[in-house]
Length: 99
Image 1 (tube, rainbow, N blue to C red):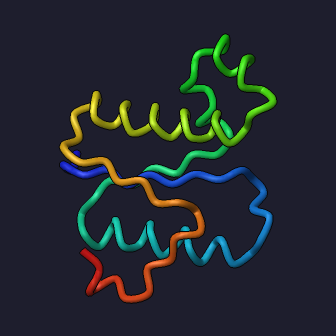
Image 2: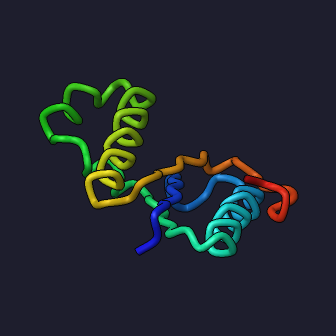
């Protein structure tokens, strides 16, 4: 296990093909740097307690934010020293220069 975990998520299927380029750039950057990488689909929402998910059913943005926080927290709980969140539309242009 690496000391660093990089996380991304998006629903499937991806609504735009260009998102794959972004996701691949982050995954590749993580691998090049020896970081662990995890991609979540809609299963990320399972990290949130069902009663809270039900309350936030009509507030998907808040549910997504809470799910991201839970994913970050889970990474730290699992022993990672650093957990990095990158949105699905995050593109790394020059991975050799990105720190």
